[in-house]
Amino acid sequence: MSRTIRELAEFLGARLVGDGAPAVNEVSSLASARSSAVVFVEDPRHMPAALESKAAAVIAGDFATGASGKTLLICRHPRLAFARAAAFLEHKEANAGGVHPTAVVAATARLKAGVTVEERAVVRDGAEIGAGSTIGAGCVVGRDVRIGGDCRVYPNVTIYPGTTLGERVTVHAGAVLGSDGFGYVRNPESGRYEKFPQIGRLEIEDDVEIGANATVDRGALDVTRIRRGTKIDNLVHVGHNVDIGEDVVIAAQTGLSGSAIVEDGAIIGGQVGIADHVRIEAGAILGAQSGIPSKKVIRGKGVVFWGTPARPIKEYLRELALLARMARKT
Image (cartoon, rainbow, N blue to C red; front, side):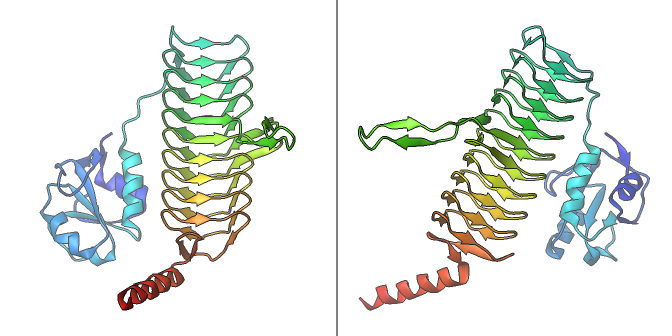
């Protein structure tokens, strides 16, 4: 969608330096920028390359004040402003809604205005889908599922009965939401395992994004909950009864065992293993491939933890250095 640079600056709350009249319609990298594009710079070292690019305007920090040759949008957080500019310039066609002829929608399902149900999707009895949401091709929306407005469920997602999604939730292709947790009881006499009831719920709050082929189990008896604004990468597994706070980021291939708690603002790297009944307190950072044993508490806002078992990175690096010195002496 074309906007003038001045309109973009006003939307971003940025200070405009230069000509605000030209129209822009896309964001871009420095290397591939066209004359209708906006680029961003957050490191002063890259400013010369931005000024030499074909871009119409550059989003940058205060360090760019005084630079010449391009229209500048000066703001405090260039990367964040660039992300917002991308959304502002994105062309979104009006969603008229509609159910594809090959989709199967139960008579008791409730679809609000502007809902789209694509090819071969199934929406079962009692499901409710909020205004403007899209259900992708091949999805299955189970009985009594609740999906809020403006959600985007990409193809081949399976949502088990009783699951709730808030507003503006994005679920990428192949994800499975609300499946049974991994819970069994061993019979001490026969040695065989018998299934523990998995009859709880999964509740996903507003503005959550769940990556492709991620799996999120429902609670065993109560609820698994993912709170507002959390972002989950591809191939993440969330076990039953897990409670994930607001604005948490979880990278790919991480696994959270049953009843783990992750508090607000935590950051979890890729391939992290979190055992049952672990608590990750607010703002803690777990480095890639860390391991957290059962019932462990990780605390320290802004502190990076690494290794297995995970400990503060300074301690971890000291141990590695000591091992290296010992190895050289042998």
